[in-house]
Image (cartoon, rainbow, N blue to C red; front, side, top):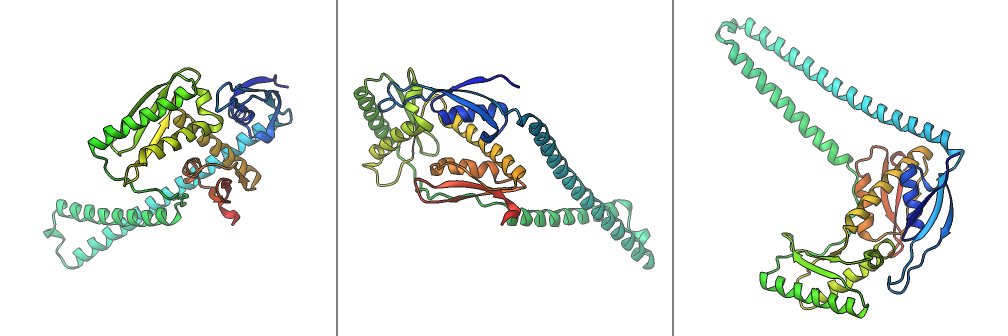
Length: 320
């Protein structure tokens, strides 16, 4: 039996997610015990990390081998299907080209004009026919991809319009002043840097000690700071200005975690052939899950429920 390993994170849920990623199993195959629950503190200040001891359940080891074998089989089957399809298309194209050439030569011979066509002209005709067939196959393939591509959830977004240099400078100062006053009230020393990118998004990066306290549970504290900053920035603007607040590349790291979670859940759905509902997420995180699985051959995603409890459901494509 495998030994326990300790995992520490902001919450017990995050510890469990880390353990699942480390052992490459779903939570139902995890044997764990909570060492410390952790605490959020006041507005993220004075929070303590949670800690668990975890290992893979004893009965799961053989299943892990079976699961890996099943995954390899699915991968091999998909590759074989794709290879067979390409081989069939190539064989059909070659046969059609051969038949067309034979018919063309026969017709030329019947009319006694074969001598009037040199080899270069025949090659040019063949090249044009191949280009026409390739173009036709490309159009058909594009139509098939467009018709079969899964449609990811679209959250309503406000139109983004250019922001003048004068307004950019003013909004940067307003955002920095608001955040400086906010963190001063929290007795927290944080370095603030803000600037607009080419898409007219105001990007604000925060640096300081113990930034994990500012991030909060699943980024909720950081999201709250971003929301308040957006209200301040857009208060005097007629057109909406998008604001993004980040620290220690949390947004990118959270995106990576969610994408790994999506793949893990998709594998569970394929193995159990049962739909799985994820925990409620905000629109941005739901879009990450949809995007991560939109090209999966075997599962599809959709959202259910009302905000703030709206969640993503992963299900087999042939289960509907």
